[in-house]
Length: 429
Image: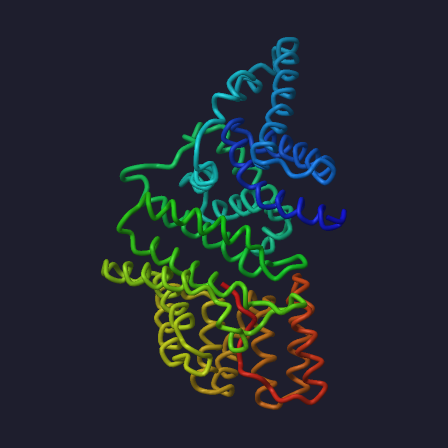
């Protein structure tokens, strides 16, 4: 294997394993910063050794052992320093004794414990989600700040206060049980969906997707479904993830550029995942609980997944489902997708009129899929100059290389005089 290929393989494995190792370290140390420092030392060591020595049989265990040794060294040094500096003893006492670290490390579902801890009710809802994205997904501070429409410095201060509160408060490092679980579940479902969404349509980087994050989110949801049986929204969210992820193999071309849903080779969709997702959705609906956002989104995904062809997709039903989704989750992104569904069901002019009504929402104007949708509709209506301008606006806003390539291709095809295609966005969860 060539050196470049070996390093690419190592990079993929490190990215896939980092979240679980980070979670276990935080649980053992009860200190976000110490855990991150130890993990970074281990990742650096792996990056230096694995391309030469080969991948270990259990990469996560290798990373954890190295990080654990680094953390133990730091804790021992701090313990020695504390004995010579009594004024620091109180702070040092908050960390585990060095010999306790191994005992704390032996437990399952580390990520789930971390997510429930980050979603503690003592934190504000938006901070729960932001802390989880920063900690579990290792999203940059700038990416998290942009997701919540605040300056990076503001987000940094909020996350610092949240971590300090969790470390001082002695919140149990565990998955809640009994009556506590349902009260915390909605926040955890939201976080699992954010993880899946980032994997399904990555906000930045070279690739359209991060399959490791999709697999992580699906695994978390399987455990949540087992923990909270008979909860329709949990079943529906797992169904939604499976139905969306079933299209993974067909969502990009040989160059890595996005392929529109209408153009995808449906023989490459995963029929097993579609069947499983459809069964889970039917099970959720049979519970006859009030329809929440995940049940409705899963129903939309099921219409797409079970249509034999793009032409046979029931866009009238999808449009009606988006109307229902707006009633329970009226967000700018839901309205944007509803506008696209209206365009598919009732024509490009109707969809464009709906998009024009959304133009006053600042968060959408800074959201590149809005301008991508406008470009597609304008192109379909033969308003070529306006379509190019909309696609260029989207191109200036996207931070994903694959999506940028898709948008540049649209611009070149318009300028070459091609007719507008069906009105659809690059897929997003």
